[in-house]
Image: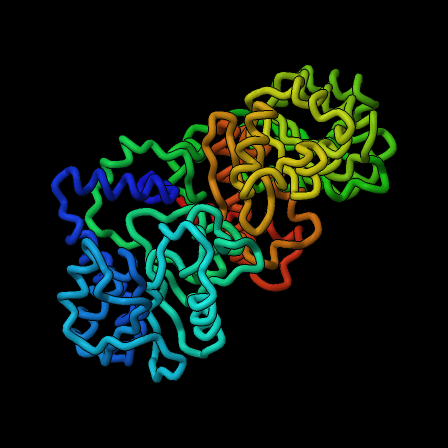
Length: 491
């Protein structure tokens, strides 16, 4: 799982402390951080004219190191210092002493090929003052590219927003160099936009510090779940790979279920069936080939169908309709003992009684709401919490199962507090039916034996990669067809 962990600002401070306590000098950590910034600058702009903006704390100290090393490598470099350099303390003061180049006040009229933003890092605990806001505004309005140190100045490292809310001021960087592990703010929106490309540098903090910190936040990358992915065995047959059932809506709303079923089939489920109301059997049968159609009549009919324990995963909600009938179908699925994915109408149907849903859920369930559906079944949680990450974590604790809060920064949260942020979804994934495919993919992985958290994480990441592989013009039907190539590349 190395590299997948995310550290809060406080946890990163603890990682620094533990590294120093183990015998690694803090000045060495700062020297290595500055060197990592220099590597990124010189890779992009060899022998460039570089302005390094240094603040009054350790972020500024990293900047003074970067300035010194850039000068040694032949760049034309100068420091623009914020505040009185004689007031610097600790490691930052020492690195300023080692800097033997030009130091001047921050100016608008700079002729630089790039700017290093070392004003304020993740330790900033208050909004930028008016003077610094003016500096940031000048920087953002210029055409000079910026490399930020740790986080762009003005951004909250945990929340991924500006220190004073959505309308606050923050540097917009081309790239951000951070250290040891990413923070949640590097991935949460809009922080991911402020950061540009985020590069994680090794500054010699030993991975062993994580054994003490024991982080519960992760970036959703394959390292998080790949060792448990259900690759086909050489001696496997289709009955070893599960049987996913996707419950269809009425005749006029069957497409969403078929999208989900296709996602389940392409993700590797051995068998997939669409459970179809009697009035929709004909239209579903006319559109499906490798996917079977299983007629049922109402909640009792679905219960009878799912009494066959070979049907070990169920997805329902897309195109199902909102109301008491859907509530009964959800109860039938949850009472079957199968793993269950609830999406769309299966969630909205409980808007007047969310607790009535929660009492039926079990550990092998995944809820996949977008923000609107989330608000319906977890009213007020998004407004009460500071980030989507905190909201999803609280929701998972309430529901007692995995909650996947969809968006450009999809959050997957487990009841035990583990959370993962997904950052690979391209903007063209925002298209009708994409969420239906995702629900089917997760159900397909559950059918193959993945646990709920791993299945939600793997399905979400693969969903994003499939969309990226197709590119612009994507529609929901294209997503499953990209999965074979994505899976082959992953393996």
